[in-house]
Image (cartoon, rainbow, N blue to C red):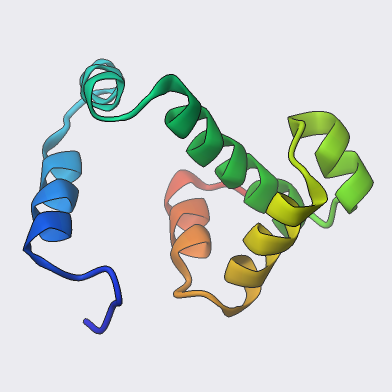
Length: 96
């Protein structure tokens, strides 16, 4: 795997995330590891990606999520030209 993120700290972090076995465990871990705003920003990006994937317009996405056009554009760039992570999650969650 070739990733700009890859180092011993991110590997440990991702292994920690993968060790979580329930939604409750995920809430507990992320509440300790991230600020509320960080979790909300990550959640918002996933929803923006989902809506983009469904063909929603920037205006519709902005109204639905409160995301700025800059955030929507950034997510769109990674959705189209990134590592494929969004689509991987969509496929696993059976999200269109």
